[in-house]
Length: 454
Image (tube, rainbow, N blue to C red; front, top):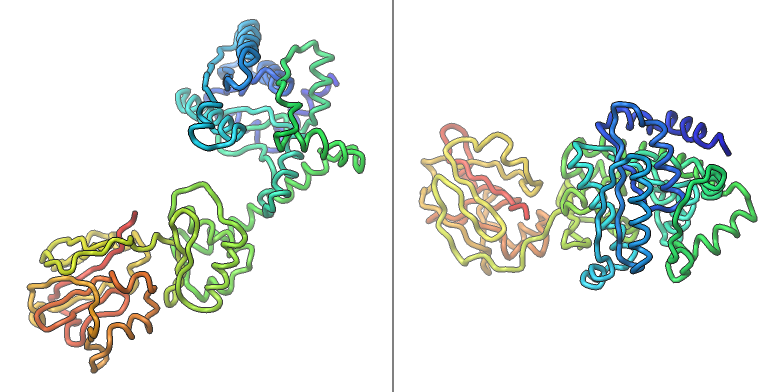
């Protein structure tokens, strides 16, 4: 067991942990006082002591176990003082926070812990954060994800390096770590809640993992290899999704149809996260619904968080649908200038707007039309569709209702879509076009429509 540190050294060099350590200005050890983090602290201390890189420890007193939590904090303070390692402590009443937020105790504790570590990393100029996750933790995580029906990303488990976080002990199972601590005389504390099988992870640890080890004594290592292979596959598929989007918020419908289902799922998830700004994910059911819509027709489906997935003519995208509030019945347009009408911004200009302005939102679908000064009355106003509205297009007057249907304008938008009008009637409709005789070259009055980003 004296060779444990050599095993960690080799793993750190192979999986990018060593490079992350070298590139960071300082290193934070997430130190709970348990066996895993106690061994991690010693490994980091042995590698960084005497060097130019600063090592600090971080401890969160979750206040879940009363006096026991305070005793753990006191233990961590004594250990760090004996090693000459600065210790940062965060004391948070997790039970009260969890009750107030409706979160589970474990979930809330994890959120508090990672928020503290991230904040401390920023305060220290971008320090790397070392956590004591082991191969056994990875095994438990994969089992937990599998029981929830996760995809390949769930099987990928815990990554050795992710953003600011590094996991040097990921190559070691929990038994190895505890045996090393015993042989080396490293003291540690034991969390009494670890034996409470009401927690899902504790049940997995106490019941499921021992059963797997009866099938394969090295189940921890086997699942660690599975996770590494799954991460490689995920990274490749993610790269294909990035290439498909090419930095855009939308995708051509035909291209979306041709994507492999695995790449399609990543594309939709990226669209969703870009739209909502949320780190939460979509379910497989959401993905299947989106794919079915792409293959079958145009329209929209609701997604979690108020977002929606749209298939509009030749494009697919995620966006927030229009608000339910009705726009004003009629509003005079600023000429030139900007006018807000419900969820839209209409810009009237005698020249091109600022470069790139129309690229902010994929609702701008063939809207960059212009209208010549001499052919319209420059006293313009905007209103919503009315019963019986017609629009002169293609040499004839057509029902606006039918045009919206033909152009696949989502049903939810048809009552609030802005219609630009002059004294002769409707001049322009976003997603449909400009009245015959108004669009022309030369000196022109440009009318641009843009869906407001929420």
